[in-house]
Each structure stands twice: as structure tokens, then as C-alpha cells.
Length: 358
Image (cartoon, rainbow, N blue to C red; front, side, top):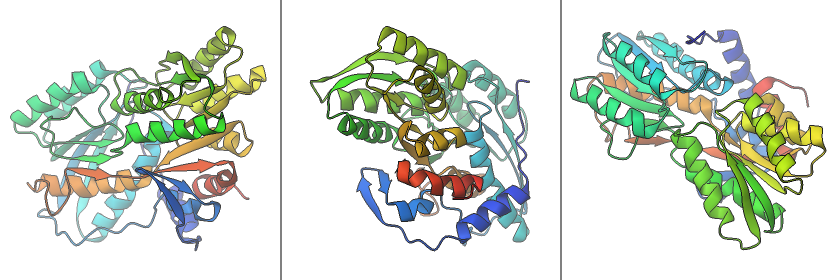
């Protein structure tokens, strides 16, 4: 299978909303740049399920969008939940929003170009793109805008600076996320030791930016060394194999920085199998990764608010479809938060996202 239209049940959405509503904890966070270190009792603030459409009145009663993202993966399923909620709320107001939500099984800029070409031949109100490779895809987006298409970017990867895309909704601080996670690792290791970086997909802006943030942070400490930087293509299996190889080449490895949602899982599997004491830091909310966090195999995870990304993407797309440009109604870049969570936060995050009983 080379493409997928994600369908997620409203029962699942409802259960997540109920879990969110059951929490009465108020936020109590310590700021670290654009990411946050949560206190255990406020972990529920990491993902905001409590969204309502703003007071903007759409100009039409029906919209049709096309969204393509890097690869079929649970991370984008979480984004789709927020999209579904916005879609439902628009329908409650008498506005019907439909959309295609498509991606390949493996990240590919060439595949994304093909999909964009096909979408450009149809009459979508807005085309949204989670950029697979900013250098390759940005010129394609420019051409689409020049031809009269309304194009936005969303999710975790924006286009290159200066791209003609209308707006972006998602993570605007991937570099800082990589730096924050790596700073936590460096502190845990007393600022000395050998570290590997698992990047993800080559050319993907979010993965590359986090890896740069990690590398720049490690470079600040003279007793720390990067012994390997590898691309796992956002694959758990590839991350596992690469980690085994890194451990074979560096049996005294002290830490691993993981720059996407898949590689903390692959790295943790390998670390556990080999009995290594290497410290893992990584991204996002994979259920297996959260269990590794709970067990202390992973030291910390940077959890992005995928739900808000999806909700805000639909809301901004409606405004773009109506001919609005960034300004008072929506910014050029809608920033969504990342929250760094630790072992003591894992059980609550598992309950929040997966319904696990504490």
C-alpha cells in the first residue's frame, strides 16, 4: 500500500475528550525556551483537548481540503484526531468540511511531489503539506501558489524560509526541542561522555533541525563527543538495527538523542537487549516509548501537542480558503507547544493518551 486515508472513530475521539475533561490539575510549568518541563500533576496540559472554534464566520457552507504528510505513522493519526474535532464543530455550525488525508508508507519527497501534482489537478479549496524535504518541496509549493492554488504547510515541518506558502500550523521550534532534550541528557551525564544521534528522515526539516540543536548543544561541552549520526528513516526497525551497530562500534556509549517518534522505541529495544546503560532522550508519545519512559529505559521525551496541530490546521485552512491572508485572523506561523516529560510523568501520560489505568 502506498497511500492511506486515515479514518479514526468518534468513539476514540470522545474517549480522549472524556479523559481530558476528567483532569482538574492546573498547569505548573518551568519554561525552557519554547518547550516546557512539566510538574507531575500538570502533565495533562501537554496535550490540549479542550478546543472551540473561534468566532470567524465562514463564507461558504462547504469546503474540501487535501492534506499530505511525510509517512503513514501513529503521530499523524493523533493530528487527525484534532482535525476530526474541528470538522465536527464546523458541522455543528452548518459548515461541512471534507478532506483527503494521504501519505506514503515510507517518507519520500518524490512521492510527495507526485501527490501534490495530482492534488493540483483537482478543485481543492486548500492544499496542506507536511514537508518531506524542504529543499525539494519548497520550489514545488512556490509553483503551485503561482498557478493560483491556495497552499499551506502543517504538522512538524514547514517549507524553506521565503517559500510562498500562505501559512504554517505546527511546531516552529524543532531546533530548540532538540537542544532542550540534549541539554537534559548532558546534565544527566554530568556533561561528559559519548553520544549518538538518530535523526530520522534525511531532508525532513523537523528531524534535521532537532539534530542540529542536539549537535550544537553537545559542542558546548569539551568532554562530550558525538560518535555517530545516523538516519533511520523514521522506522522503528531501522533505528533498532542502527543502535545495535552503534553499540557494537561504541560499547562505552553514554547516550542517544532520538529526533523523531520512532527512533526512541528502536533505540530502547536495542539498549534493553544489550543491557547497555546508555541514556536515551527522544520525541513524542508512542505508547511503547512511554512505557520505556515509565520503566526508566528512556530518560525523557518531548511530547508535541498533535491534537492542537490538527484542530488549528482545519480552522486556518477554512480562513485561507475564504481568501484571507495572515494577519488579525491567523498568524503566518501558528506555534504549537512541546512538553518535556520524565519518568514520573509517564503513567499519567499513558492514562491521558491511551487510557491506561494508573
